Figure 1 (cartoon, rainbow over the protein chains, first blue to last red):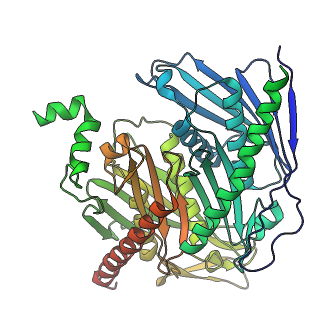
Figure 2 (figure 1 turned 45 degrees about the vertical axis):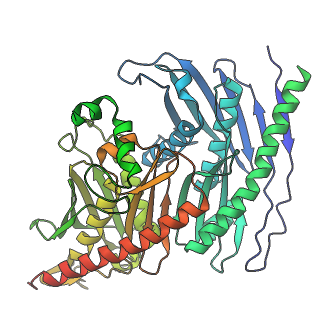
Figure 3 (figure 1 turned 60 degrees about the horizontal axis):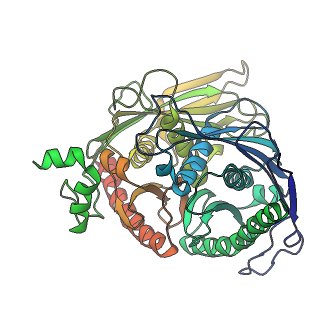
Amino acid sequence: MEEERHTEAKIGAETGRGSSPRGPGCSLRHFACEQNLLSRPDGSASFLQGDTSVLAGVYGPAEVKVSKEIFNKATLEVILRPKIGLPGVAEKSRERLIRNTCEAVVLGTLHPRTSITVVLQVVSDAGSGAQLLACCLNAACMALVDAGVPMRALFCGVTCALDSDGTLVLDPTSKREKEARAVLTFALDNVERKLLMSSTKGLFSDAELQQCLAAAQAASQHVFRFYRESLQRRYSKS
Amino acid sequence: MAAGFKTVEPLEYYRRFLKENCRPDGRELGEFRTTTVNIGSISTADGSALVKLGNTTVICGVKAEFAAPPTDAPDKGYVVPNVDLPPLCSSRFRSGPPGEEAQVASQFIADVIENSQIIQKEDLCISPGKLAWVLYCDLICLDYDGNILDACTFALLAALKNVQLPEVTINGETALAEVNLKKKSYLNIRTHPVATSFAVFDDTLLIVDPTGEEEHLATGTLTIVMDEEGKLCCLHKPGGSGLTGAKLQDCMSRAVTRHKEVKKLMDEVIKSIKPK
């Protein structure tokens, strides 16, 4: 029986956003992660970011239905359950985004004709769509690591919002997200900080996109450092 | 002999062409397939358009109906898109409830409408709190050969430009709506979002307007929706291989050129319609 490892990281405070028109507020809110808290899935993780929290469980590599099996790689499946109500079209769209991101990093060719299922349950959600997607991505990555699924890189989700005057805000609160002109969510890998997935809402220009991408790449460093620290802490004591 | 090689090693077959900077159907890496658009073909719909991108065919029909406006926004109407991928268009789709591909496409079109503000929802309101228009936009794919998102966006735009709504007045005494079918007006289309899709091959090469086979072999896809001022309504990259900022920049410039091509085609078609 492995002990639970609870790790917290306080990176930056929520106050003090950059108020100058071109200054990025490079502070992320408090986030926490807990691994191996469920007994049945092969890997599980709970990721808390600000006031959004997602619980992820990974089953795999496991048996796959003949209709779904792929002869040379693993079949990845993502199930996202919202906090209230039945899953709808928006959940299906997010499942597709998360699944394709995981497929890009998971080494499926090592486990052909098997299935790897990632189940995400939204535990608390402050009504923010983009923040939820980033939290789901982080939880999915931590759960895949906990399950021991071979991956070529880790990935993380970062959200940024653009105000009507062009101010860039990383990791916005849900109130800020609603008032923003555009909200962009990116998934970045930790090897070369390349863009794996992007989902945007609202209108923005090309230059603003490059700016947001650069800020997200800088912020992803914090998240990857947190992943590394939390795993170090977990394995150093056992 | 080439057909045998293509069946056995489809990826290698494609790589041979990509090395010469072209594709099996003769296109260059940045070239779109022939785009055809036909407006107003469905007489029973309030607006319609048929778009063909090579072999991919999508038809869009818009029907306008009455509805009560939402309580939290009493001066707004509704635009309800729905993308249907029937078993007719490709053997991979079965009949029954919409599959994942159709749901993702529907969500994408809904996001494009929402983000680009193509129609101001306030324009659809007839009487605040009581009556508003709801536009049901049904996009049906008739032939699936890749790049469904570009075709759907174009078909939606063309159909909305073709929609004519009759004038509605609320009778003060009876409080009922009176529809004057003889007096129709076009919708106020504020922006023209145009989608450009790319497929990523082997983590490095980007090709524009992938066909069905190319999408299957690709390691990732990217769709950029741009309006006429160069503003992006949507950057849809559902996972797949990573891209650097520089590659994104190249995609943006291609999207800008594509927008000009599509706008020109649209203007020609609109002009050619004889006024009723």
